[in-house]
Length: 175
Image 1 (cartoon, helix red, strand yellow):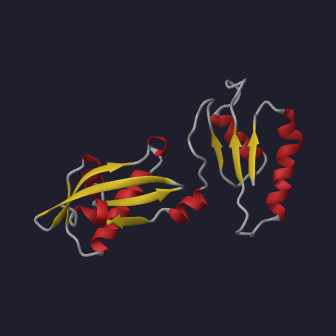
Image 2 (spheres, one colour; image 1 turned 135 degrees about the vertical axis):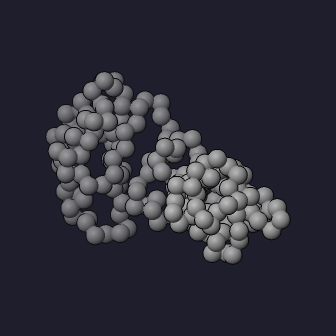
Image 3 (cartoon, helix red, strand yellow; image 1 turned 90 degrees about the horizontal axis):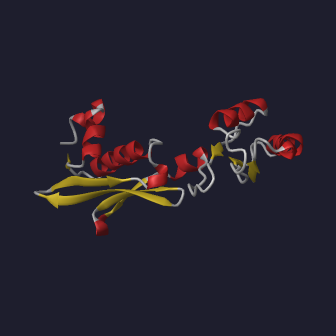
C-alpha cells in the first residue's frame, strides 16, 4: 500500500491518515502487505519540512516508513525492512567486484588480483543513496564475503581503508 500525503492538505488529515491507520491495524502481521508513506512537496514547500513530517508521524502514530522528498527529486522509495532483507553482498567474479542490491540500485566494490591478494581499489554507492550508511554495509559485507571465501585483501580505496581502520574486527585482517 502506497500512501502519499501533503502536509497542508486538509483531506490528508481528515480522511487519509485515519484510513491509513485503520488499514495498518487491520492488516498488522500480514507479511504480504507493505505500507509506505511519502510526503509530497509541491506548493507550500516552506510548510512541508522534514521536521513537520516527523511530527505527523508522531501525531498519527505511523510506525511504517515515511520519506520526505523535495519537488523534482527522483530518489527511490526505500522501506527499511525490505532493504535489510535484500542487502546481501555477492561476489561477481566475472567482473572482479562485490555488489550489493539496494532496492534495485547496485552498489559495488571493485578489486584487482595481485600477488594472490584482492586489492580493493574502488567503491561506489549510487548517488541518491549516499549518506545513509549503505557504503559501510557494502564494505563490511565485502570483508565478510572475501574472508568467508578464504581471500586476503588490501584496502586501496580510501573509503574501504577508512572502514577497515575504524573497526577492531577488520583492522588486523584487511591490509
